[in-house]
Image (cartoon, rainbow, N blue to C red):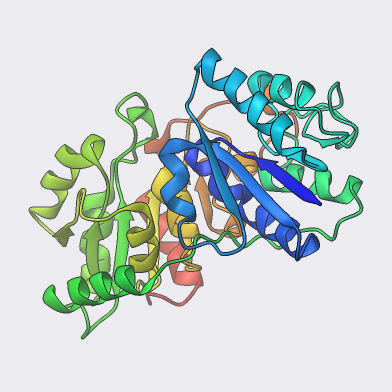
Length: 321
């Protein structure tokens, strides 16, 4: 028996699906399992044993046709489409696979949650409903992207070289995509000052979009680690941190794989379906309640989240006094 799992992206969604992939692998142990994902995410699974990876480029009709031919050639017995967008629905429909499970109650999926998804639950919970309908034990909300010895050694050396072994440190992602600067909370400098006063070191992480804000913030407190780490390296660094504070961003999801507390600030986006997996109790937002139907969510101004409310949330977990 050969099983095909489809999850192309985006990064946060892919990370939230890793417990589902792991659960399918456990359920179909000793079976040949393939994961179809975007080529930009292939490296995330290099340390994942027992699954073969097939990649696809985004948006290419030629690649879509090529993938359909590849699937038909391999004669898979079962297909789990965890993406279930228009493109992967077409791939599934033309795959020639007799058993097809997906996220929407429509053709071509024989197994599906039975209702239209409108953001009424977290994305992970929705994927778990696919497993439930397929009579598979649900996955545990713990994302996972395995590391290796080389990555562990690099992070250990970096921690030592930056004198971070003598006290605890906190990872902060203060930026966001350049297209979504409204997601950025404006009081990270004050937060860093408060945490440093509690004898906690600060590490500012991010990529090119975060370079300017990290340069500015690190002038006063902490270490500027912009573009220092790959995704798997950031996960490994996170395992050594006391906790992380982020905006609603990719690093929020990446650090959820580190199995540490993630305090995530939400304003213009709905945390009901996109908060870091397993971190619902640490969501920080202007509102404490969110509508069941995602279409009824009202965006909030993230600047209305006070510094005191963030510190109080961290204090509840006894990281500061």
